[in-house]
Every structure is written in C-alpha cells, then in structure tokens.
Image (cartoon, rainbow, N blue to C red; front, side, top):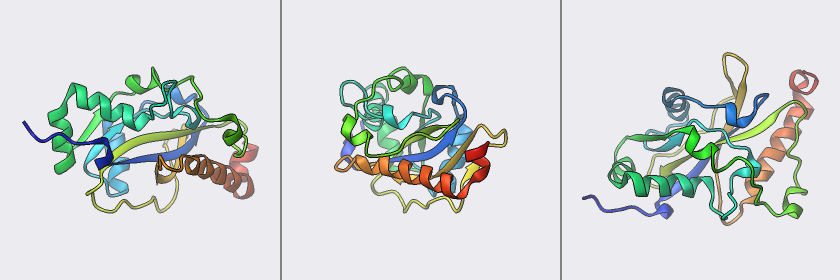
Length: 190
C-alpha cells in the first residue's frame, strides 16, 4: 500500500464566478472540469463539478469543502488519493456529495460577512473547489473570463483558499462584484 498523504500536502484551490442559476443546479461533467483545470495548468488533483455558494463553503461542523473532499477520498479510496498526489491523475467527486453537505449552513461570522458585498442583482456567486498537490507545477490564472456556451455561468479566475485568512475568499468575490458593477453594464443591467 502506498504511503498515505496529509491534507496539508494539498493546495485548496477554487474557480470563482457568477451564474443566474441556483448553484446546486450546476453539475459540470468530469470532462468539463478536466478542460477547465488544464487551462490553468492542473493535471493532478481532486476535482468536482459542484458549484458552491461562497457563504456555504464551511459546513455546520466547521469543515471546509476542501477538507471534506480530501476526507471522502481518504476513507473511500486512499490508494487513488496517493496516486493522484504523485502522478498526473485527476480524481473527480460527484456534485451530489458536496451539494448535500454544503448548501444551507452559513458558518461565516456575521460581522465578517457584512464587511463584504456578496450580492449581485439577478446573479449568484459560486466557487468550484479543487485540490492539487503542493508539489504540482505552477497554477496559471485564466487570461480572461470564460462563459459557458449556453450563458449559464461565467468563470472569472482561480485562487487558493487560505485557511489562515479565509476572509481573502470573501474579498475576492467582493472585488469581482465591484468590477462587474463598474465595467460590465451588460451584466448589471441584464
């Protein structure tokens, strides 16, 4: 059996964007996520097609979506987890696993949430979480935002979640909303 890995050996990353749909309705296929990840130079890791409301990325027990993904694979398939850490292999978790756990409980302190604007008229914010080994090659950002062909969602970029400063995630969404309001009349008016 391969040596087990630790959650600290993985970067907790996310794509961030907006959608007119409810986040739980978004279920990107393994192929869609693989294509998105390859655009940012990711070929090893743990991915999902689930889009999570940023307010719900930490469940009622205080567990982040990234730790839940890691724990699920640690229990269900530790060999695959070890292989994904050392080889070009992407493990894919079905959206249902995350949507059932990270869909209703807001674990952010109210004073922290009130410091950031997380509302955009007619749109919902989302994060698509994924993990990559810390030894993985450098992750690139998207050269520009990507819109789904059917217009159902738009991905603006990729960031690393910092457990020591989780408010950076909220600040990222706040800055995207400010950018959209200032620069994108097609969305603000639409």
